[in-house]
Length: 385
Ligand SMILES: [Fe+2]
Image 1 (tube, rainbow, N blue to C red):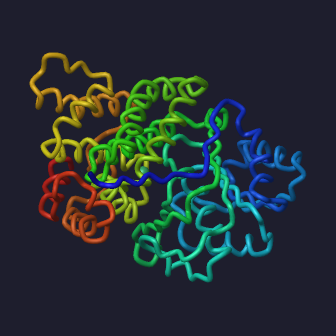
Image 2: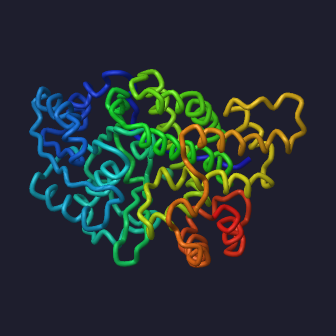
Image 3: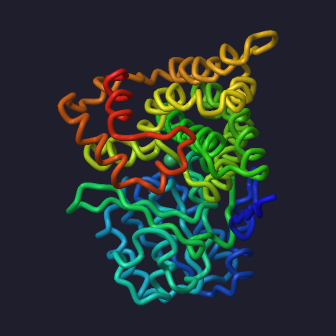
């Protein structure tokens, strides 16, 4: 019997209107001065005002840094840290998608560690806990609110780099689906497929446990049963809530397992071509599922069932292949092409991308259920170009 370790954020508060608890949570964590880290889109959508009003009503002194951009570069962290140094917050609040939450997590840690930031790239390199963090997602995708991972873009090397440390775990995550209602259909689709890819990669990966497997299967089921509806009608609050809960469950799982080959490819292609992370995960996922299927057909049968496919009476391999069919069908309904050539990635770059994915993303590749080398990745990319 092996020992299984499951770690997660300090707590999750979920439900319609749960954002009203943010002031109480910040005070519970000992805060009087709080820094909210977000982006200008969240500000113009009125969500920042919603949160700061609750905080001020709780008698907290509030400062805001709203300079987060998609695929945040290391320089953004520096700018945020300068703002944090002036604000001297006792609690940091991350409000937004994965970018805002990731920068909030790493900024809180840098407030209590000497740095520089580059010293912490990699796994378990942050010496001490940071300032307590509360995270409020406004998309249902990254699961960053409960993960111990921060992903940044290194502009010099044109690669995405990960910082993994339990000191990045938030003390509290607040899941209020009303904050995700304004997401347009394409963002709903790509962030939802990011969450789906976390659940799929964590479930089929080699580091799964009974805890992570259970969360992953439920997340797959919830996303499959709700993503089309939220894409078709963003005001479907029940679908939004199910997707937000599913995204969080998938995040709880993969923070304990890491993702796998689909994320290694998404990180590599995303670092060079600046495509949205969720979109990359979406169109890469079926390629990787097809490749991985032989490694654990039984798990793919379970995925097919969670996706709502009818596997009754089918031979095992036929049932397993319905998992890939189910994901391709979902992507088709969401209008997402699975051909690499549709994303302006030149064919001659395939060998370089394959080398980089296998060579620099070992944290992810090592969790892939099927062994994979550079030639395998070239074959996968060529077959799906
Ligand atoms: Fe992801």
